[in-house]
Amino acid sequence: MKTLILLAGIILLSGCSLTTSHEVKHAEKMLADFQCNKIETAQMAHSSITSYHEQALASSRQKAEFYVQSYKDGDELFNVPLTEVIEEQYFIYQEACLHLGGINPAQNR
Image (cartoon, rainbow, N blue to C red):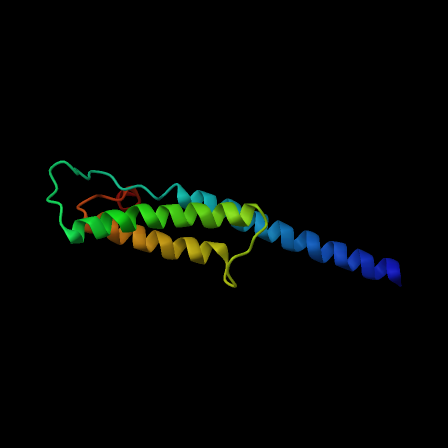
């Protein structure tokens, strides 16, 4: 009986770790889409709005990278799947890119 419970526990834990591993790999692939091209900062008029979008662009990518690294280190920061958290940061990133006049490579696919 103890062996059966131990075996069930091992199977459950290995299943959870495989799911988390797959989720982290998918999130890492999503990070590759965090690119914003064709932004000419030298020609851009700097205002508080522009500064806000530049900060949002950098911040959303940094947060996404931090979240992925945390999950890789075994820290689950949220009660939702990692990919949903990365998708939310990607949305913020895309919006900032568009407001700065950049083109997101994912839009060209």
